[in-house]
Figure 1 (cartoon, helix red, strand yellow):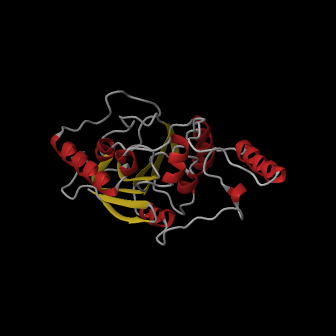
Figure 2 (tube, rainbow, N blue to C red):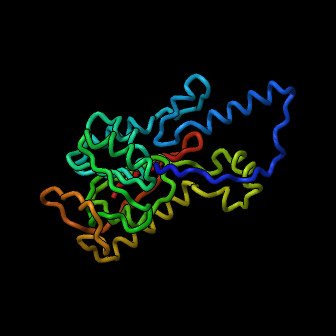
Figure 3 (cartoon, one colour):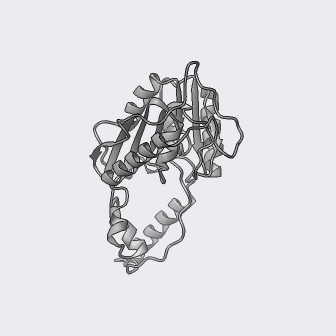
Length: 256
């Protein structure tokens, strides 16, 4: 997932109060420590032993690795620093990752190139810089934006989109602390049913649209080669549908 440095919002809640000067100094020291830590990639080791979170039982990284082991060409969208992709024991013969934030591009390149994966700098706006049907597997963990029609376009017939997504109203108390009360449509954002509808609409659009061999605007590096015998075609009738939601996150597994 792409990580962008957050803006400096103005809190809408009252500033924290402290029981003593010592408490205030401790708070300010913790804030300064957090502010000094690099946010490149997904390295949160500085929180080891200091923070906990509830994890779903199924484990995205493990499930993703199982799918990568059987793929011929895979794309990881918004790879961040490449940490999750690099943890897979086996990568497909053609493995590509996209990322938009320059610090993460450098980190992902250093981590993934030795494993045979190519990192492509991409602005996270359509079109994806790959030809139609280039991949039989597309994965993405916690994507910030999802361009469903582009995912449908770059997937080969019978391909799969597999993603773990942040669920609706995740840490919403914190969001509203910084941004103030939010309207219902913001609270509903990232709802699994909305994702299902968008994925199915993209599938229908891909079926009705002629497919071309490359995006309209060529980019470098060149897209990965397709395995022998591959052909371009539209999404299959099964479409793309989120399958489950656990602990505020939805696991999306979509087959074409």
